[in-house]
Image (cartoon, rainbow, N blue to C red; front, side, top):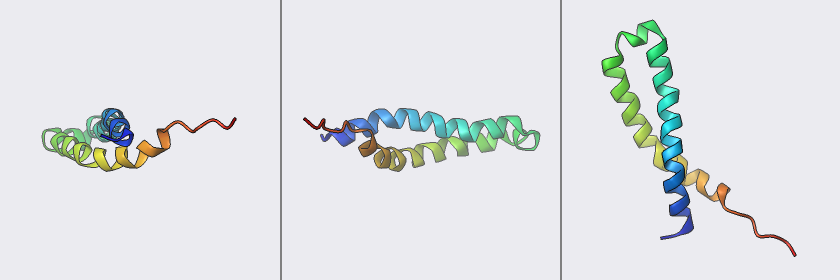
Length: 70
């Protein structure tokens, strides 16, 4: 496997956590959304799982080390 795949896999864990947090915090803190949390939280989980791979794949090349100039 390529380096990009390894970086994207490790980065994916962090991206998934951030996406879940971005979705879960409003659902749990806004009373109108909190009342429907049993429906909205699974939607947040699915969206974070679906959106994680393309975001991690796009960010992975930016995290590669740059070669040093002599």
